Amino acid sequence: MKKGGLEVDKSTIVCRCEEITVADIENAVAQGAQTFDDVKRLTRSGMGLCQGKTCRTVISELIAQIRGESVAAIPVPHMRMPLRAIPIGILADHFSGGSAMQSLLAESKPDEGQES
Amino acid sequence: MRRDYETIIVGGGVIGSGIAYHLSEVQTEGILVIDKEFPLNGTSGSTQGWVWVQSKTPSWYGELSMFSAELYEYLPRKIGDIEYTRTGGIDPFFTAEERDRALRLAESQSQAGIEMHVLDRDETLALEPALSPKIFGSIHSNLDGTVNPMRLVEQYMRAAKKNGVIYEYANPVINIEKKQGEFIVTAKAGTFSCKKLVLSAGVWTCELGKLLGINIPVYPVRGQIIITEPLAPLLKHTLSSMRQTCNGEILIGYTKETAGFDRRTTLDVIEETANFGAKIVPALAEAKMVRTFAGLRVMPQDEFPIIGGVPGIENLFIAALHSGFTLSPLVGTILTELITEGETSIPIDRCNIARFA
Image 1 (cartoon, rainbow over the protein chains, first blue to last red):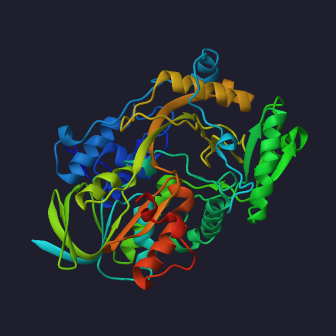
Image 2 (image 1 turned 135 degrees about the vertical axis):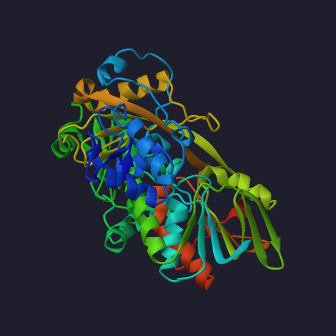
Image 3 (image 1 turned 90 degrees about the vertical axis):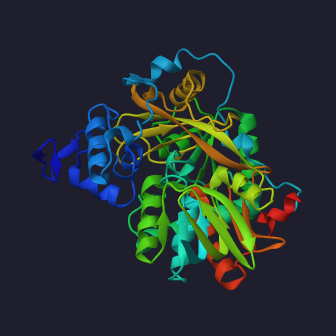
């Protein structure tokens, strides 16, 4: 694999959090992955602690190179909160609104007296 | 150029790929799966991946879920590791009233052969020490478990391709016509024809139905989920609304919102989810969340699966349902029977789309 004029070894790690290599990315693209998110779901690259902040650009470049496209053609992945890891307790303490949370038990409808 | 197939499956998520794989065990030629993006971009890639049986009611629906959970025991031997674990499921509750409700549920489910037990606080904490000592009790069932959703769909795809299935990615279907006993499927890049057509595109199945003039009443329901950093093993079971993956992350969330096709996460629902998570597992308050995500779940109008043929349109099949991960091996198996033999080994009359007519 040629990258920026340099030979990149297939065993080079591109996602440090999940230890995903150039070969893993090539494999995912060979399976049909076309975007950073596609590759992420197949390899876990970008799912680690840094949430793709380290590997996103490198992997997008690799996808573009393997597919023979320009980097600009590779869609930018979604960024979602929190942008930096935060303790769950910080959010849990602040809530005082209505309820979208569901209870599985409350949803169940035991058969009682109905035909089953 | 038009390409001819025996069977085309529109939608390559857990249901479409599950059908493709199971069908390819029997029919080794002429199967095409066509997906508007890469599979896992939609609902199948944004779920916790529970294989959940205990609270599925009425009992005929619970029974379908149980049969499918049983098929999961064999699936990895056929398609490879999918990180399926029968962890057992625990649904904690907080009041005596909820316990009465749980007892009624356990009674009616047990009559249908779905074994589950109502436990008191101490029994529950003995099984799952991470739970809050403030719970009143729980329902426990050994039938429940989890699967890695990404791995499952990937392994289905790999196994299906190995059996000769062709995949078309990033190729949305824009028109379908039935002419002289053949379906002509026009997609963004290419036109395909087939004798048998399966619509299994999750929440997008409704739009595909319109192309053939049929009403497939499924709508999207948004669910938001929190993911933590990898944690030391904390949860042994799949809890209602929460599970720990084999990599250590905990996924928290079970929300239902009507938000159309909007897949953003919102702060209010995430706060509520955080609150809930820390309420049932206090140690989570200290855990760091690294990300949130939202997915669109499939919800048929009456919440029960739409599976089977379509009255009046021969060789058209639909599989659009909620709980796709729980039901996938079963749906793959029965759709294969229906497509290749014209009948199924277990009755699926209740799932027929004719009920909405």
